[in-house]
Length: 510
Image (tube, rainbow, N blue to C red; front, side, top):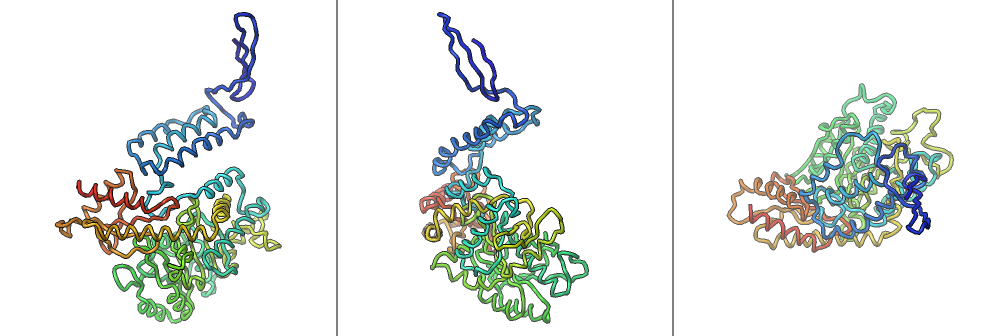
């Protein structure tokens, strides 16, 4: 028998039997080491085929898996070790990653990951994301990829239609809501500095007073982080709340605006707070912004999806009057990480805040023709992947009605969880369910108030260690609470029923 390599991963096998007959065949072989990826050019799709083979069984089994199995954590060590001098080859490397990942990952794409505010990835969105990786477009510049630019323009238009925003708004896709905040608030900062006679994009903030930023107690830390990134300072933001639940004190905010004596300010309105789903009255804050000449920025990370259902659309009423609006795609839109959107009333504000680099080899923000948009001149990223592809795929696949149906199902799931909590003798509902979040705590009879925070914190740790259902704790009105967010496209009432069952079982052991 003779074996002759004829190419990477393939060999010519020559075998002679006892009668002297010769048989030949081409066989696949596993190479011990691999160097330059050029050696794999004739089978570049093999590693992708390995992923495709693993995808079906993995996705089909999500409903039956624990969200996290800590006994599998030790597998992660198999991905460690020194950097190899010679590689294993693409297929072998990816198969190792798949073997470890499908077992040791936190299965946040499944129906019972309620921690933080995280959606899943619809089948169409996941396939669209694979397409984005396959085509690997240079998505920020029209000359590099007219396809990416056109698709981004399309999905921004579709999202404005979905949310009820005016078609005249400018927009750009971002990696997250935090980056969307950076985008919208950078436009606000440029506007504000211009009111002081300064070009902050060119000259910076030196010599300018602090930019006044006002919000309610519902403001999210990502807004503060954006202000920190922009050099405005995260702690310069002032909150005006009439209670410890964070509801806005309109009179106090108006008094603060009046005290500025006509100097410009930024108001941040919040649509969907992470502990209860509560929202600011957008129309009232829009009235204040109009009355005092302020910039109105709306944080609609997941709350923007309230606009999709007649049952919750009133919460989003007034968002069309905002100067900038942010939302997340990897929350209620259910597209893969990472995905966010920023919309701005004055489209030119995006180019003013992020364009005009003066690099001779790069086009400007505004090339001739309405379609020739260079999106990396309209946001904080220069290098950008084609994150419009999964958004296009999922919106094309399910449409406005499909997303309305999903949002309303999640509203029903949250309401169902609220009823289960109210009916349980050892659970306490702390706020009426709003949108996709239900806020409650474990409160068994006879346990004194001063012990409840510690008990709920330990129960939260036990729930994550158990892994069947994933929901962490937070602090609301000074109490340690659970605030599961039910916005994964797979999630149904049965999943929150299991959450209550597991919590009560673990709690009884504590």
